[in-house]
Length: 55
Image (cartoon, rainbow, N blue to C red; front, side, top):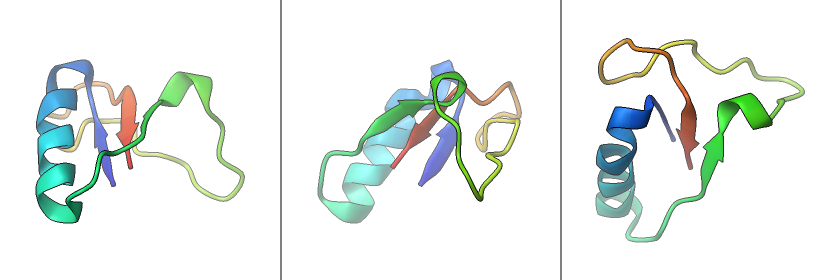
């Protein structure tokens, strides 16, 4: 699972495919609510605002 900004979505997709050898689902964080999990606010690659969950 990768939480990234718009600029790092492609990198996160590549890392996911390398690790799991499958295509990920991409979820826009502002359109999704989680019952028992609060996603990080910042991108794990650059600390900009996190916008996408690649899972």
